[in-house]
Image 1 (cartoon, rainbow, N blue to C red):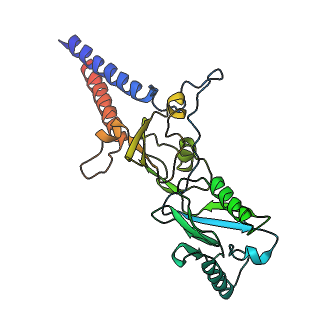
Image 2: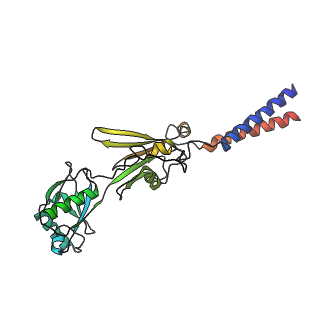
Image 3: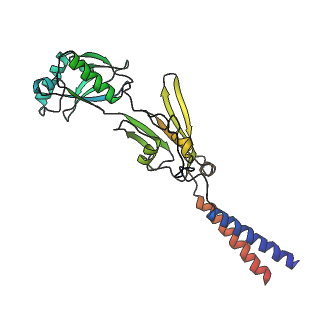
Length: 287
């Protein structure tokens, strides 16, 4: 009987030891990103997509030419005083731009708000439909119209987004809305801006929500699979995309009813207590 008790206690100690060893030494396969990418791997990337103008965007449009008086019709950056800014706004409006679509910011930069129909009112050109254009396409269009109508001979046009952005939610280090100041933004770059996915995040099930013409689309991306990630149509993000990193099953199981996450170390402590108890019992029985 005593020998059986010893075996039971010893078995309990061995089992607890194996549990602790497994929990501390196992290597989850769903943590490493870009798996499958080797020096010999050639990944067929998804089609490059640049950010395009959408209703509600604020655009900074600058037209430069040799004649400063002509430049003054478009640009607020060369004016510094409030009086001069007011004069600029008057010039712009008299040239065909409505007050509710043209603003001169505190920094002196003239911005244009895209209305619900995707239009802006631009000085000398009037209403322009800009929705769906990239920055380069819009700049090229305005330059072509100004030069084609003999309004400006040597125009250099630049366009910048003022309020374009994406939303990073869920198990990332720094969730929130991030402004985008570049033409192309990949999911990899977005995750880097947000401080990467936490260990509590499910890297195999990252969702990208995108509003398209026929409704909200959902794309699911496995960031541990390099080919799956970089070939996804959502790898190149668009304005107002929502990237959501779902918590792992372990986090879901340890989440209380009020939304708090229980400390995983608590369960390791329980296992440690059980191991200690089994050891103590074994010592007692041996005596």
